[in-house]
Length: 71
Figure (spheres, helix red, strand yellow):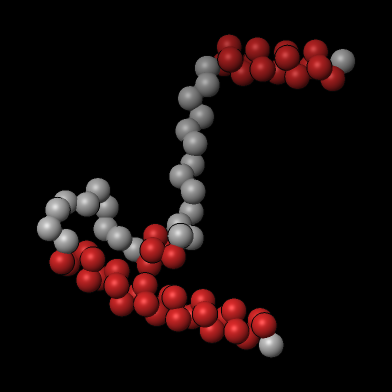
C-alpha cells in the first residue's frame, strides 16, 4: 500500500515538473546557462563526470603508493 502511495506522489511531482519546466524556459527574464529540464527540477539529473586530467607520472606515483600499502 505504501508503494502505491509513494508512486502516486512521484507521479504528481513529475506532472508538476513537466508543467513548470517549459514555463520557466519561456518566461525567464535572464539568460540561463542551459535550459531547465524536468530531471533538473526533480533533482535526478545525472552527476557530472570528472575529467581524468592526470599525467602518466601522477598515475605511476599513485600506483607506487598503492603497491607500497599492500606490500
